[in-house]
Every structure is written in structure tokens, then in C-alpha cells.
Image (cartoon, rainbow over all chains, first blue to last red):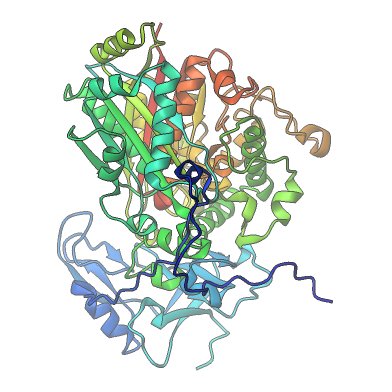
Length: 179
Length: 453
């Protein structure tokens, strides 16, 4: 016997053309609120602007960061202007391996990612790079998350067909890498 | 920064916070909070319209309202056109920013009486869509597409806090228990409850290590606060025919941090006046020195606290503040905020929970009888006596104002009148702090309220 106690709710329904209405307007105060479905869909013509090379590189299986020409501060998430000295940054290639700085396992989330749960989010640190990088981690025992994962060496992987999204790159524990 | 024109919090009101208030639109909810604000001091609407010089309105997300310019629609609904007004937004700190912008209107001499009104109607989409709307307040190029989920971001922050400082899961749970249990005595709260440590940890896992009970829920609700100069206060006193208690805003502070937490530096701690550089050097820290703010701490919270304390003349907050209503969207962020606000040193937030300072004197949390944990300094500095966001709910644009309303009632000594129960009244409360916080600590506001003799 199933232990399910609730039917799955969906947001389709019936088209309604008229509603019951009281004769006496004073009765409207006790009327229940009307709740309708109101869709909102949009396709943006979105520009990655000055960050475009990062995405172009991903599609060529390269992960880029940036480095300040003046103060040498380096960013794993690219930005073309240095936030510390105001100088101009140049593109650099990030190391192939990094370390898990922190992580979580998401069992719930935004509608867009619900079907992918549970998934692991991690922040990666790199030798010689000053900031971290947010990514998906795989190859870990997702049923048994542990603080011991922090500090683990991980290696970069790319999906075969680029989607021009930051998820074109993801990380696996070193040793688990299978090309 | 000095505060030359005194600004007083005269009155405040909150609507009932609930998961879904389909009975009212956002205008109707704002009106509920506004009516409470007026009724509490016996001010008629017609007189209020004469006296109020202008408004600041706040709501976080145009996506939730599916309506731009909802701020003016509230001002219009309350009958406050054609007075000056504007809408403010700053993620989770929207309400706190609204409070401070209304303060500025009065402190600058621009207005004698300013009304701050904030709201959010989050039930208009399913919870997972709501999570998506909130996650759009992270970088939509680099962070959101990876799996945008705010609970996940905060979970990563506390995982690092636990790894670096040894903060324990039980300490997180104790915060969730405190706030939910306090809220049993607060009729405005959405999610009160009597839980033990196992209940918190066995609840549905949302983002490891945070469970459903560690996290605030989405809400529909509104809050309003009436601020006035000395002249404004006199005008209101004349209109209502009685003297009002003088609760003054003595300090404000606001801090910021980089949107992508991955970008934040690992550098030196911003010290509180009562801290020393040496406090953050030693073998107990990774690399022998605390790397700050990193992923474990909210630099904006510290920056905001230092400014507000300085303006209000607060020395060591542990001695100089009687209670705090802070932004506990997660049990973990309450612990991190203790450190940002200087209640304890960075890294000591977990032990600070167990010290008992932040628990209410008159509430039995059953830690001693069930777990043998003695809250040694219980009641010394109650934090979130109202139940905070975890238990009251978090209708974003209203939340920071809700904190101001609860703080006002604490300082007036009127908790019994509003909550119909005196249990959560902080005894002899003279000075309180309110703290509002946006996504992973991007904007943080701290304001200090004091009872003037």
C-alpha cells in the first residue's frame, strides 16, 4: 500500500466564464478571493558583454580567470576591472586542479534545478589564484556528505557539447577522473 | 557621522504574517500595518494625512508582485498622494534600508514626520518558483545557472564555518529551538513551535547541513513604522492629546560586500574597538591567521555594526545593548551575525550560543533537563526575543521594519499589550539593536534604538 496521502497538485485547470454573485452587495465582504493563473514568459536577448571570452573559452574546454596588470590580484570569476586598484585585468588560464573550499548538497531548490536534486554545489580554490569559483561537484558519495570533503583535491571536467553556461565546467575528485 | 537632528520612532504596526494571505493584495496588507500603527497611538487617518510629510516604501521583488511601481500603489492606497515618496530595494535588507531611508528623511531636516511601509507577497508563486526569484538576487551570469538556491549558498558558508572553527550542528539547532520557542508567545509569528535538537536535525534536509527547521519560510505580510523629529513628535502628541514615550534612533550603519561570495577576499579582520589584532592570530586559525571575511563571515555586518555603535556611543555591545532583533534567515546566520556584531570573537559563535546570553530568561528551552546543557548567562543579551525570521516569517520588504516595530514595543515596555503576554518583554530594556541582511551579506543594516529619559 502506498503511504502517499496527497494527490500531486498541478497548475492546469478549467476555463471559467462566469462566477456566482450575490444579490446583496454587502455579502461581497465575505466573498472568497479569486485566485487565477497568470503566466509570465520572456526570452531575453542577453549579452555576456565583456565577460564573453569566459564562455567562448569554456566551449573550447578552457577555463579562464583574470589578473590585474597593476596589482596582480587574480580572480577565478572573471572581471575586467580590478576591484582593488581600479586597474585593467587580463585574461589568464586557471589551473586544471583545485581544492574544495566548501560545499553543500542541495535537496531542494529553484524550480529550474528541482529535477536535478540532490546535487552538490562547491566553491573551489586554486593555487596562486586569489578568489574562488562556484561549481557543481560530482563523484562524491552524495548520500554521506562530510566536512572531510573540504580540502579534497579536485580536477576540472567539461561537458562535451557546450551550453555557454558556467556549468560547461564541473569538478571531480582527483583520482576519479575518467576521460 | 553624527546625528544632529534627533529622530524618534513614534509608532509601528505589523500585519499577521502567514504563508499565504490570499485574502488581500499587497495594498491591503500594507493598509493593515498602517492602520495598526495609527490605532496604537489613537491617531485618526485624516490627521495622519495632514501630519505625515512623506513616505518610503519597500518591497524586494517585482517578480513576486508581477507589478512594477508597487511602492506608489501602496502610497496611493493609503491616501498619501501627492506627498513625496520613493521605493527602496536591497534584497533581504530591503526593510532595514527602508527604515534607515525614512530616518534620513527626518535626520536631514527634509521631513518632520515620515512613514516607512514595507511588504512582500511571496505566496503568489509556488515555493520552488519563489526560491528561483530569490536566487535571481545572485549573479545570473556566474552563480544562478550553477544551481541558484540561497539555502545552498548559506549552507556552503556554514560548512566552512564548521570546518574552520569547529562550530557544531547542535549549536545551530539550539538557535532554531530558541527562536521557534520564543515565538510561541508572539501572536504575529508564522512558525512558532516547541522542538528539541533531534526534531531540528531529523527534519527534511534542504541544503546540507541545514534542515527545513533551520530556515525561515516565505511569507505574505507588511509592516509600518512612523518616524518623527522633535517637532514632528510634538505635532503628533498634540493631535492625539497625550505624551508619547521617546524612543530615539541613536545610530545607523550600513555595510556592503561583493555579490559573488566566491569573489570575497581572504584578508585581515575589521576589528571592533574592543578587539585586538592578536585575537585573530595563532595556530587555531587556518594558515596561522584568520582569513577574512572568506566564506565564513559577513564583512558587511561588521562594517554596519561598527558605524552604528560609533554613532550611538555603544562600546562593547555585550555590555551596552539590552536586546537584538537580528536577521536569522538561517540558524547558521544568527551564529555568524553574533560574531559580526562583536558579541563574541570570530570563530566563537557556536560556543557563544551555549553560553546562554541570547536566550530569554523566562522561557524554558529544556536544554538542561534533556541535554545537560546549562545556559550559564541566560537572558543577559536576548537575541530575537520575537522569534526572528525563523519563527515570524520573512516577507522580505517588511522584515526589517517588523524588527523595528518589535524593538519599539520592547523599549516602550508594551510587549504585553501587543502580544497579549508579557513573557517576551525584555526587562528594563533601554537600548536595542536591529539588524537586516541581504543575500549572503551583500547589504547589511544595523540601527540602534534607545529609550530616552
